[in-house]
Length: 140
Image (cartoon, helix red, strand yellow):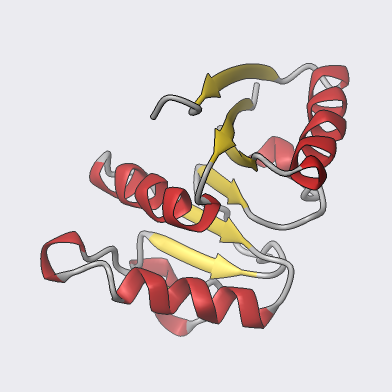
C-alpha cells in the first residue's frame, strides 16, 4: 500500500522540497521529483546545485542515460522504466501509476490554491485506500 505524507502550512515549498530531497537521499532511498514543466524542473535543479558543497544531492533528468546510477530523478512525466520508491509530487496533477511508489510526498503551502489542491488529492488518495500521514509544518 502506498503511504502519502502531506506536509502542510509550508512557508517556502521549494526550499522545503530541497530539504526533503536531502533527507530521502541521506536515508539511501531513490526519489523522483515530478514537475509541471521543464522550466520548473530546471529551476529546481539549479536550486539543488546551489545548496552548498556539503549538502550536494546527486540528481539528473529521469530520462538521462545516467538515471539508473543516480539516486534522485527530476521529470515532468513518469518514466517508463522501473520507478524509484519515493515520489515528491511538485506538479499540479495526481500522478498516474501512483500506486507503484511506496511513498508519495506532497507539500502544501499556505495559499488557498495549494490548500484546495491538497484537499482534492487527500480525498482521492483516501478513496483509493492509501495510508495518509499529516505533518503540520506551521511551527517548523
